Length: 136
View (cartoon, rainbow, N blue to C red):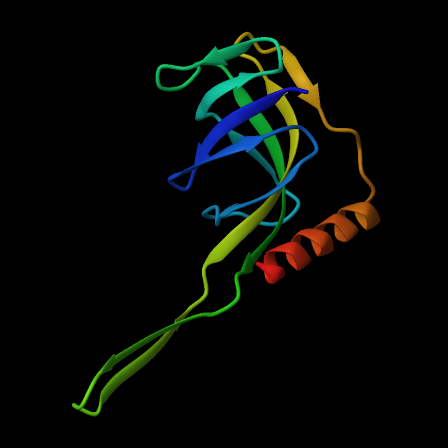
């Protein structure tokens, strides 16, 4: 099973073809568009791996943007005792849900490719990932 380690939004993700990943929100992105990640730190499979210094030149990962959304509200509550001073604030982090389609090596060869999925299957997988995230 081939995988790649990509960097986006200040974070690193280990991805493989066909996987649905929740990442930091991509700027100026609309659902059902193709996204390319060129900051590939490493790629390979169980037997061999190609490491970058710091990135692998020529390697890329193609993905499809499924949707943009917001996480559940995180409450920030600050209170100073005996001073009748309190502050309540909330934050909802934005995210993008992407599906990895292809992983390319540095010479342009396709390492792994996801099989085609129907829209209904994608919706079921999205619902499962949201349910898992909600339980955390």
